[in-house]
Length: 370
Ligand code: GLY
Image 1 (cartoon, rainbow, N blue to C red):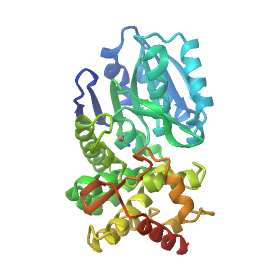
Image 2: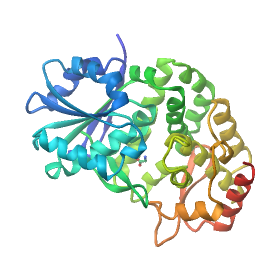
Image 3: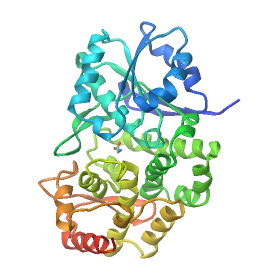
Image 4: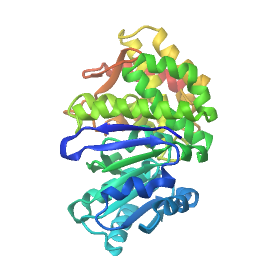
């Protein structure tokens, strides 16, 4: 008998459960059926995930009729053209207001499909079936949906909570090692932002998780989702505390923009580098000990992850260029950047009024090491 952990995201009328366990895809019909008003679902995936998992999902859905669309894989999909294609397809498939749309895929698919569901007929319900570690621990939970703009990442979107999240630990077996480790960047983020004991555990058991230990994967996903659920419950629309979940993301979004949202830098890799930079910045501002950034980088290195600007292939803009790219961050208030900094591992906070000369020096020195 496999374990299925259940995390309730308590948001009043928008509450839902995140189920985490093995074999969820193969019993998707039983999991989703209570939500259905008619036995029909529309599934949107990408071509890679669809080839790997759509048949298993169809089998798991049993006699529930399935109509499916596969979009191209990759971050470039997360823009107006594929978004519009998805919405028009849902309309052509006559998906009605009371129907359920399923997002089967990683963060790109979850964000795009969630946004499509939020605007379709002024809002239909959707189920997230996240297939990447990154999507299981972060993007499938909390209702942030959206697409990218030429002006920056995730700048067009809506808060639209899913009705259910099914995180099947087994599907992580099919992830390329690079994608799994990129998702691990978001797992580390949870330890760094609010739970030093979890970070201790990751230092010890992260390598076993990466090698495929299912119990370690289940624990890491459940713990991350529980932390995220508690934060989202307090601050669904990111007026305050939820911004902590953006630890590492101010740097990350600038780096992703600088690398053209390409495979030069995956989102989770950017988060890992961004977390290392945020801790280094905290130390330079006298907020945390020298030991903290060293420990962060040592763990990322031990996991074989990118942790420095030097680990990003190809050219990057100079420090001022990167700071300009940070200017489109959604946390900008009155044109001023807000950073997530830390007093120690597990003690992050939102910081206004950071001395940009220190940021510039940090970036200049990090770029010089390339
Ligand atoms: N990924 C950050 C958030 O959901 O708030």
